[in-house]
Length: 146
Image (cartoon, rainbow, N blue to C red; front, side, top):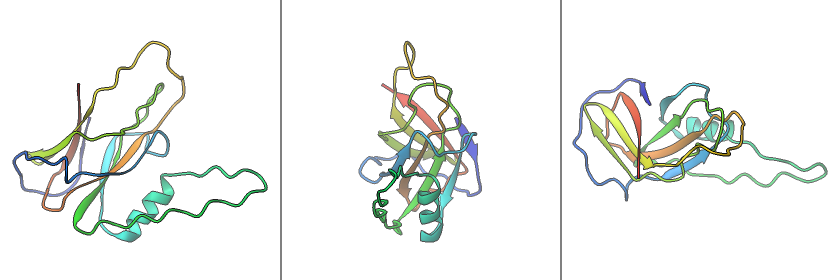
């Protein structure tokens, strides 16, 4: 999967496991097409968090107070929409590593076996994660590995 945006420069791959964090990841709430956005400030961050998540409210009960997540100012925050899937759970729950090469941010995620009996429901997964602030890239590619 690949998507494009604006920015330049290139960095070599480095150990990013300790510097990458998943902030939010859901099976529903993303866009129909794969793509990414760099979230630039707390206002955009809070809007994306509220817009990409939902809360089930049981009739007669009060909604739970929203958990406030602080915008990380020392890192870049990336919203990646995986696109539309017709079956199974395609939510990203772990990022093994990230690296930048030739202006492409490579995000390595664990391979998940699909097939056989799966739930048949359309899903639009998304993930919000951080990368070092000095990473510059114009596209994002997810790579699955065992």
